[in-house]
Image (tube, rainbow, N blue to C red; front, side, top):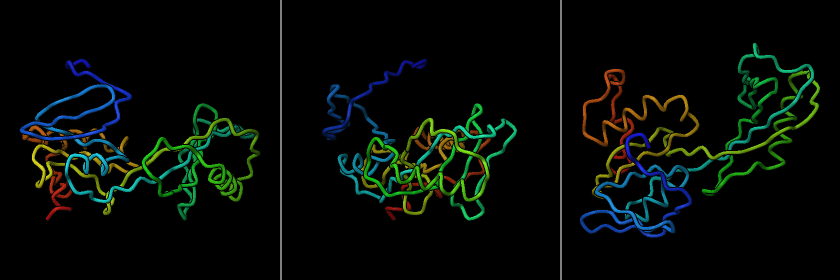
Length: 213
């Protein structure tokens, strides 16, 4: 927005065509441009197919989170704790405990919602390891973490569809990797030299070309 971009929400894509430039038809209107960036998360493959590209197998996996009030309360000094067998993890958050069963449930692209069974499994795993008393389940939510088949992010122009740039498959590491990932994607998109901080990263490792060659 600071740079003059418009953010349009509730505009699911209905039809994509290309005749020298892209034409994207949505319920919020028609948009045109020279480059289409496929940053559709769980919908990356369906959007790519609308643009005439082959899917690469981006798989949305549901992850569940639960906010618990426990006795004794979760102190701010408590670190992120992960089960040695990766069955669950938890962390403190404003006097509460955030808990996940570390699940990866295959899902269709959707506005994910937590499943009651997954919530119960998370609590059962926690109670098998700690002696805190759970006083209440205050919140629960879920999200989709989308992975390419090799679980690496996917960036770059599709070699088979001119003007289609991929920015997908960030999986569960978007927050941690976003500074470097966005700089890498921007340099690939704009054809500019990478930021010196990421000059050691080989773009070919994350290029869409690995699924096309």
